[in-house]
Every structure is written in C-alpha cells, then in structure tokens.
Length: 74
Image (cartoon, rainbow, N blue to C red):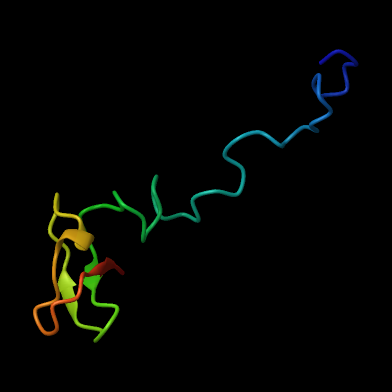
C-alpha cells in the first residue's frame, strides 16, 4: 500500500481479493461441480431419470439405466 489508502500497488481497491461472493452457501465446492459431496442425485440430461449419487463415483462415469446416456450431477 504505497499511498496508505488500501488500494495496493496496482490500484485494486480494498475488497477485490479472493473469496468475496463465492460459494453461495453450498459448501466448499458448490452443488453441481465435481467433488460436490456424497449426497444428492445423478440425473440423465436426455430422459430425466434420477439415480442416487454414490460416494466416490463421479456421475459422468455412470450411464442412465433407461436410455444409456451419461449422467450429470443434479
């Protein structure tokens, strides 16, 4: 802070650092991202079939039991 006003050497104002406004209250990673946690469902983007998520198994590695499409995280 060369000028003592909290802006730093490149003019970024205070409060522009990491972490502000992130997360949306859904834990560390967020709900539909890889590593979103053990609970929830995997859902088929083609037919809408829901399958309970298995801990340690990414949804995109699973196939829909009805139509065979790759599942995504709900």
